[in-house]
Length: 381
Image (cartoon, rainbow, N blue to C red; front, top):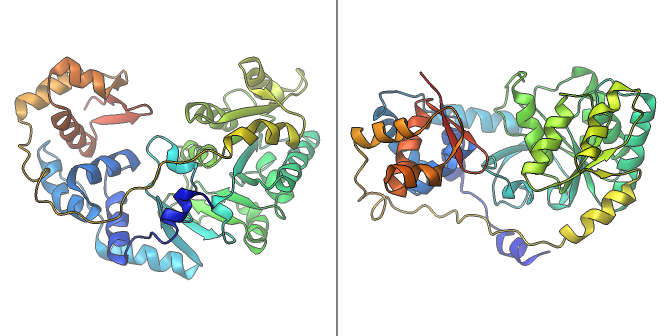
C-alpha cells in the first residue's frame, strides 16, 4: 500500500455529503468540470446546492436542481442490486481515473473483489465485428496481462471487448457501462456480465441508475475506460471507430497507446495500423504491454480532496459578484473555438475569480462547452 493509500484508507463521505454530491452532479447542466468549479467556489456540495439558484439566475436561466428524494431513490436502487456509489478519493475509486481532466466525482460500482479497483489496469478495445483471429489475440493479451497482475478494463461490447473480458475473468476485469448499471448493452452479453461479477470483477458507470445509453454516451464511457487504465491496447479497429476515440482519449490523458498490427487488406485493421504509424506501440503479446508499463506503476498520485465541509463565511462569502459589463466583456472575448481560460483572463483583464464565476453562470445556462486542458468554447443561443 502506498503512502497516499494509507492516508486515505478510512476516508469516506458522510451520508449527508453523499446525498449532496449526488444531488449536485444530477442537477441540470452540472457535469464533472462544473461540479468541481462549484465546490471550489462555494466550499462544499451542500453550499453549492444552496447557491445554484442565484448563480444560474444571474444569466437569466432557471435550472432544475435534483431533489433529495431523487438522490435517496437512486441510492436505494443501487443498493437493491448490490451496487454502491463511490466518491473520488474514496478507497474504491480508481486512482488513475482521479488524475484525468475533470474526473467524475461519483461512480456507481457493482461487485469488485477487495482491492480490485486499486490494482493497475489495462484497457483492451477493438472492433465489434471482430475476426476470429482478432478475438483470439484479445484473449491471449488478456490472459497474459492477468498473469502479470493487471486488471483488464473494457466496455462489454460485442467482439474484442467481450473476448477480452471472457479471457480476463480469472485475472480480474472491469466492465464500464454507457448507461446505468441496470441498463446492460448489448443484452446478449448478460451472461458474461454476470460471470464477471461472480469471478470478483466489477461493473462501473458514471450515469444515473436507470439511464438508457444513447449514442453520445459511448464516447463518455470510452473516456472512463481509458482513464481508469495505465495503457490502452487496440485490437482491430476500423477508421472512425469507437476504439480510435478511446485511443485518442488515452493520448490526451497521458496514457500509453498500444496497437496490434493487422493485414492491410482487412478494413478492421486500418485503424490499428494507422495508430502504429502515428506512434502507438506495436504489440504482439501481453509481455510487450507489461514491460512498457512497468516504469509507470510505481508512480505516486496526488492526494484526494479533503471531505470537510467548510463554512461559507470568509473568502467566498465576501466576494462581490461580477456585473453585467464584466459578463458582456467575457462573452465578447469568447467564440466557438476552444480557448484557454488563462488567455481569457489575460485578454479581458478580469480577475481569475470573476472569470470562473462568470463561466459557471454561462455553464449553468448552457452557453459554454468545456474542453480538456482548461479550455472553453461559447455556444451561440
